Amino acid sequence: MDNLIIGGVELKSRLFIGTGKFSSNAIVPRVIESCDTQIVTMAVRRVDLSSKEENILEYIPKECILLPNTSGARTAEEAVRIARLARALGCGNWVKIEVISDNKYLLPDNQETIKATEILTKEGFIVLPYMSPDLMSAKRLVEAGAAAVMPLGAPIGTNRGIRTKELVQILIDEIPVPIIVDAGIGRPSEAAEAMEMGAAAVLVNTAIATSNDPVRMAEAFALSVKAGRLAYNAKLGLESNLAAASSPLTGFLHEGDK
Amino acid sequence: MSFYDYYSEYKGIDFNNFFNQTKEVDILRVLNNDKISKYDFLTLLSPKAEKYIEEMAQKSHKLSLQHFGKTILLYTPLYLSNYCVNKCAYCSYNIENKIKRKTLSLEEIELEAKAIASTGLRHILVLTGESSKDAPVSYIIDAVDVLKKYFDSISIEIYPLSTEEYIKLIEAGVDGLTIYQEVYDEKIYDKLHIAGPKKNYKFRLDAPERACIANMRSINIGALLGLDDWRKCAFFTALHADYLQNKYPHMEVSVSVPRIRPHVGSFNNVNVALDKNLLQTILALRIFLPYVGITLSTREPQSFRDNLIPLGITKMSAGVSTEVGGHSSTSSGDSQFEISDKRTVEEIKQAILAKNYQPIFKDWMSL
Image (cartoon, rainbow over all chains, first blue to last red; front, top):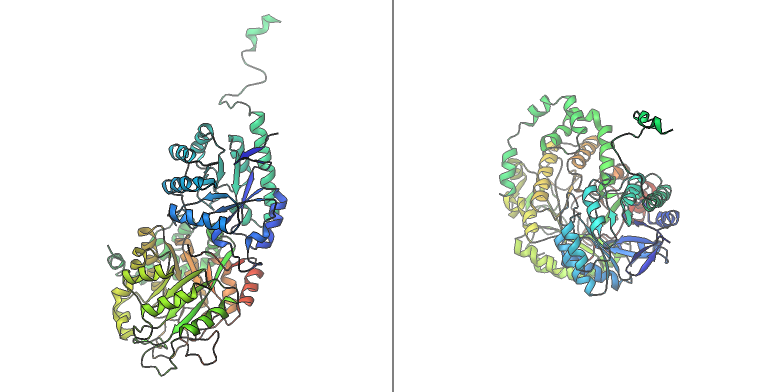
């Protein structure tokens, strides 16, 4: 079996999904069902325990692993507080660290992210940090105890694809924990591309949430993630700049062999 | 460099000349770019850009989806006091206006909070007139202490404060500041703010920046469209937002585009911004500053508000009373202005859902 193991948990699905930006909470369980995901992330800031109808937690099936994220945190300290709050709310031990102090491009602050990861792993959290793909930062995150590393493909919400491809590839090649491409993936073909590169999983939110038919789009992503993973395992054929003609021009050299 | 220095570089722009020289090809060029400049933004505010309102709407919708998804955050204002020492020509709270004045006691604030919280709202905006006697900072702190029990996010829309006072309010539990410059043109500002502390243009202009320095989480600014040419109001509001976002990149910056409403005041020389003008303003703002929030109040009529949902709005007020004590009391103080969209929270929630958007009640919490 080609299952993904994070924090000691074996996962069949390599597609993680986000729950922000949807036109209603009610569609979330249908999206989860159609793509068969096991890991669902949600912003702790949006968890509203005062109303069953508004509480996103009510819409995530119990068999899914909750991946509360620290969206809204601008420093390591805020991320740590949000993570502790998530645990107190009963969201479990997993946390996706997001520390963003740039409201324009929503690019993560790697330094603060490393700090928060250090603190939270010591407190027993399974930490999945969202980061700008930088090799040294990724290594420090691993040293700090990150269970996986989540580099961005392009800024959040842009649907621009894996613009950071070269850097993400280096992380895939060098970092011993699973690399999950998060943010920027706008099309199923780009999710397949990440998986073909050897990413352990992808996290998709905007591309599903803002499509006209999120349920079908989620299914499309699930299929492409599977296809990309299969292709990765089957080993892609070698790429070459030269064509390999089926009737070679130098075939006459071997004519005497016949 | 303060915003005033920055503003001074642009205040001499000959708007009419700029608009006369704007060509249709300029508008198309701007619409084809991903990132646009301040002058490109002004191009989108030009009279000639009106012809391209549909193209602007398409672009604005896409950018809004990308940055904010299909969501609208709901909040409501809570008026604590309508005592005011200022003499502003366009405001019902003007010290000389004979209106029914009231300041809520802490017990009354709690009743208001309960009534509002029962509608499901989790974000609140606290408002007062300007009176250090009737609604001093210490009173606001006490009020916030009560409100914390009922709400996840507390913003204030009160008179401008010093950095130290903003720090005190943040410590008390405030996370957002709304403050409108009302009008950026200094001469008009001076004329309309006849007397009182509000006459100090620069102290008000720098208030959002002082809140940034105090580490407030979010800032909402705006100009009262109608006190001056709406195009100028929109241009300088955006300039101000852009300045704050660039200097304080961690801030959540948003803008409001309030149009002047009927009030008990003397000002009647309104530069009317029509619905199509307000729409053009919102679209141009979204295209220029795609990451900045845009707040729409119940000053606007319900059908217009509903139609604006997919076009760039990120935050709307709901279940509004602009009267002091209007949510729970029968003997409330008079309102600051007349609202237009009088629907309940539930009705607005249903209207947002009908547009295939999600009303958001909670988007932050005290840490």
